[in-house]
Length: 258
Image (cartoon, rainbow, N blue to C red):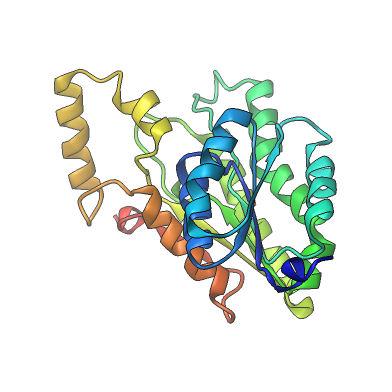
């Protein structure tokens, strides 16, 4: 390995080409970490790498679809060609399907279970030697849906995967702590990502948008949705918080207090 590899802090971020993943990668790069970004879309990955390069850290890209069964092993193999130590693993990729119990399909259940629970576990397993080598830390991106339900939005299958990720975070923190690896999670409230804008806000009429904004002001003690930067600030904290492990950090503008 070159001297560069032995002195750098490496952060692997899944879903790193946009939204929360990109904001988290940006915050980690700002703190001096070299990045290994994993995402499906090669063009968006390259655009993200160019944007993040302004911090002066090195940005590697790994195009991979995490829904493919051998993806965690292939990603880990790629990472090993770049470095033998991973200081930070951010398990940010996830998916959500909201449906009533009667309308929940086995396919949707399996897709969410695989991407939201098994992939973070498999990737942590595959990168464990590199994490142990760095005495690194894992940050799992969970959701408020593990704790708070929303009237009219049925979430049993999705909420189950977020609860499982939280439990897994605590169990891994217990298991890996003695070996110097910390494991935490972030449970964000609703965040105004490009996906939220596109799928949730864009289709609304003016009246629906007004009702939406009033609902947000009523639901969130801090009176607004989150920004990707709000979550990234929390990730940067957890990445460097040397006596914090097994924590599910609530970053939700107070949503789950009501």
